[in-house]
Image (cartoon, rainbow, N blue to C red):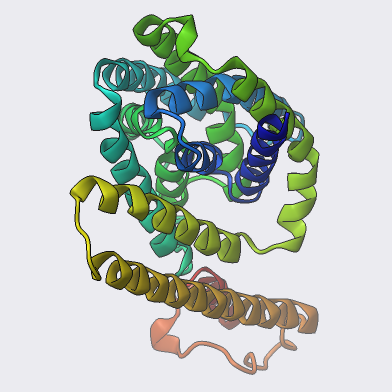
Length: 335
């Protein structure tokens, strides 16, 4: 019973992170299950089976709030399912000893990516056109494979790629990725069922993760309004990096003072990333406050230039001083 309660708390914590970031449910759950001694394939299989329920609940919620672009879901979900099925089959075919370092390396890399991703602001490219299948299909295929073999990765691979493209609103990026993950989790579960059989799923673990995730779903919606996603992403990235570094160091067989030095260096990198995340967050808030103040002041009187208008050489042809200033302030918020 104590173990099940701990697993339920793992599922709750993972869903809180996922609800605030739009990613990292599988990463957080798989990392903690591996740390508890669960075999890599069983950990990934159990997490994906639990994700069928949590992603269904998340997808329905996003759909009701209008956060889903169904064209994007249709173009990314099927390739993601193919990649996840292939990844589950691959992970099921290798031994536990060989799978543990492989899975830890993927989780370590994705955790490091979270550190880098959330330590700096995300620039958007609103001038780009609509997302096409030639971009979404390979992205879904890679993200699905990484998700199944690493026990998580669909969100950390797909969500930032769509955000960086600048072609979708952030809320629709998160909603579409979460909704399509239902199909990906289902395909991965089928792959694990074929490769491992029903005994490969730890059903009590699945139930505990699912219960914790469903409890956390409404709390996560509140948490995202309280805790800045940028700061939370940097903190969780560091936890994932340090936890999986332990597995990689053990597999490499290094001893003496080397692990201590590695942990110290990773800890310093984590603190630097959190500091940069806080700096970027403050910068974004200052820029947003400037924009809000400019909008509150309203346009300058007719015949008078704006107080801080862009120089003429930076304004676009036919663009007013007020429009140029608004464009400059919007760029400051993005950067």
